Image (cartoon, rainbow over all chains, first blue to last red):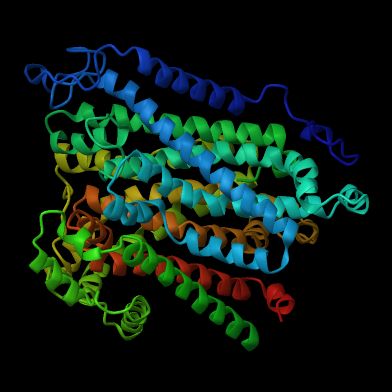
Length: 286
Length: 316
């Protein structure tokens, strides 16, 4: 979809051919996914292998980024952590996006009481930050990958429901939808044939942006011990473990945090770039 | 105006009711037997029965729910199983840490974001704008609890000028107590500041393109006056909206930051309740947090009416 050529748009507004945020964000995300996938088949050392004699070695003294308090190789743990973080974030966002979109487009198609109730329910769910729902679920089900995914996904539902309901309502006001209705098409068919293709771009942009948030949330959950169970390495728990050794081994606190920040930065840049590319009306909005 | 206020208050009340119902459902109904969860698998039948009695689990579900929300309304939140004291007192104690922490963090984030956002909107596509854009992206991407760790590393461990954690209590004096909150508040504020900067920039930029701003400039008002008096003031509605929406993230951040700095706040209480499986405390704290988020967003909604008189007319 290209930008509409508005007659009054000044020449200066034309987008430059190369979008740096799209390129930078895309490169970072691609790199991280490659590392995560690579970690499934190869890491310098097994990420859970403990060598107590080699504990708390500085970067380059043993391995690229040193070793932790149990002598595990930090570089290998970071790689495996990339897979753990990304797989949780991607599953949670896709799950939340699917449920939220279904809710949003249904609300826009049915209007009336369904819309009122589902949007009110969104307000209720939005009052539970993932950390709280993960704690509630964690107390009942125990913590782990599944609990983290559910907690993050639940929070994503209202985000996507709101955006898609608004966008879908705009599509429903269009003449071609009216034409489709007078041709006898049902609301479900119109949603699939007209509404979803027209709001797909907005959903894609939002998925990229929410992936950044999901990575941050997953890191926070595993920092608190609400993420994947040990010994699976996660960036969040590596940071939690580093706290004890801040004075003696400060490098432990550095790399996992940088990894999280780089990932979130990458997804945010990608989201911004995609928005400029796919959703020009929203250009410049944050 | 009064009718509107009444309508919104009724909706607030219903939302809070729905939230309490949801929490009750998750914490009391779904687990089947909350007493078994709290005591674990090794508990004897006698202790289980005693706890069931104490929690009132022998009563019907609806009665228990009504008792709980009746207690919420009257300030009786039940008794903590681990601490053996009323939960209301516990929450009150912990609030004395969390509320100031959140308040300082909000002040800090506004103090950073408002000038930065207004400046980048005024000098759009200039070097200031690009630097501010990069800085705000950085703030958003960097996890607050990591910033907290690094701040503790530099200012407490290396330089030794700040406490690395813990809270002396307000009775130890205003100075030391405040000092204990400074690093946590900075760690909590940065992310909010990043988000707010971006929102402020786009909101101010949008208003700067409006006709009335051009008119103000045309009638000879200096640029600075049009910027602050006309543009910024009109851009405040979206900024305040985001501030309200971000409150839920502020709460989530506070839970983490309190655990980094070992601050005895509400977030730490919730975390301890989780590790001790104290469902009574957990249920009340979650309700308190969720209620706070909803209340703040209600107040934000109301503040529009003060910030933008047009909405007062429109919603009559």
